[in-house]
Length: 95
Image 1 (cartoon, rainbow, N blue to C red):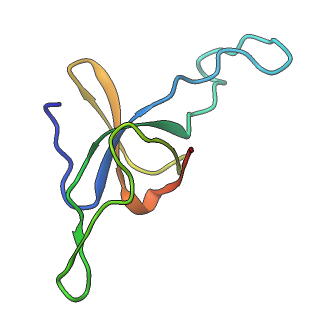
Image 2 (spheres, rainbow, N blue to C red; image 1 turned 30 degrees about the vertical axis):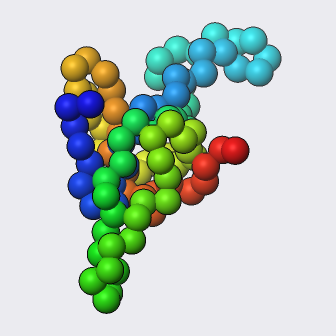
């Protein structure tokens, strides 16, 4: 990857937005919910704590994660839409 996150930041490729409702209705682009799950594609090396000790990021490349709906910064790299998040904006890892 051409983009390497720094400190406690994580780069996530968001899952695709749902195209249909549970009842089968097709959604327009304006009515689609913004995804809140995705796959980790890059991880920073961690941030320093109050004592100057490096704290590693609690996720790894390949993890599927749940993150905040409005967190992060959207970027496009080589035509691929990605999201840069702080580790604290990731709420859970799917097992």
